[in-house]
Image 1 (cartoon, rainbow, N blue to C red):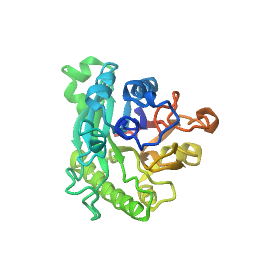
Image 2: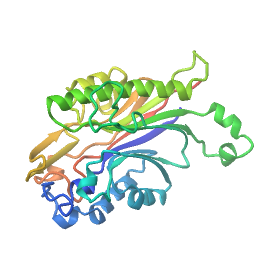
Image 3: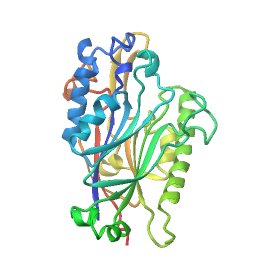
Image 4: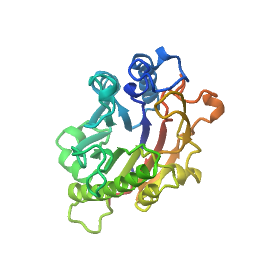
Amino acid sequence: MTTLSVVQYNVLAEALSNPVMCPDAGFSSMPPEHMSWAHRGRLVIQKIKDANADLVCLQEVDHYYDSVEPALREVGYLGIYREDEWSPCRGKSDGTLKDGVAIFYKRDTLELVGVHAPCTPREEKAPVEFGKDAGKTLMARFRVFGSDPEVTSGSRHATHVSATEQVIVCTSHFSSAKTTAGASRRVTQAATLMKELEAFRKFSCDDGDDAAPPVAIIFAGDLNATPDEVAIDGIKKMFVSTYETFLGHEPNFTTWKKRTGAFKPGEAKMTIDYIFVSNECETVDVAALPGVEEIGHKALPCPEYPSDHLMLRAVVRLPERG
């Protein structure tokens, strides 16, 4: 059976955090000059490299083409990206930056064979109708390579393709409003996304063999929903949380920030990031997350943890495919 490691990380868009672009962002945990992507982005990218995961799911990426993609390509990753057509970064950066979600994968481990960005483009910023909004979401289907070059590119490739493991990977970024309307929108986003994922799995992976187990799904994202929200309850009817499975509970928190000024002021400390897997998968391991003492009283971001979200990492074993 195949084992894959996956990272979940909201990298914190520069246009929403650098005081030069967003004076009311309110982050004071790092010096203002260190909030630039030129400084903080270098720390973020190094953290991703150090995690050395097979799959990397990112949100709030507003330096994909000029920074993140080239840096990760140099160390063996390929990436796919969905830019948010309603990105709030546009107004903060005179239109030069737009954030989105991305999936990176090791090119010597996985082969991309299908991509879907549901409900794109959105006709309005915040649709409320079911089926119109699945959050900022990108999903892809992969084949898992072996290490034998003849199998992956030579005369035996056709046999390899028909026998190899497959996996669907999805990353999402849901509505951030911590209001009744925001929670309601996240319920709609989650329900729409579950429907889209099932349709994508059936459309791209149905080989006519009803006895074969369904292709595994790994779903990671910043869902902006705490574990007690209805949106998460709905997702857990289809998926299993890797951290909850392995630890017996979700992390104590995955984001922690203290902000001043007009833009979402105050302290926010909660669990809103997740790595889910479909029921066919087994969670082998999860990475420990730092506590308050390790981060420091100023909260996130900080030099050791350079986003306002913590990086999650899980190791997942895919089911046998007959």
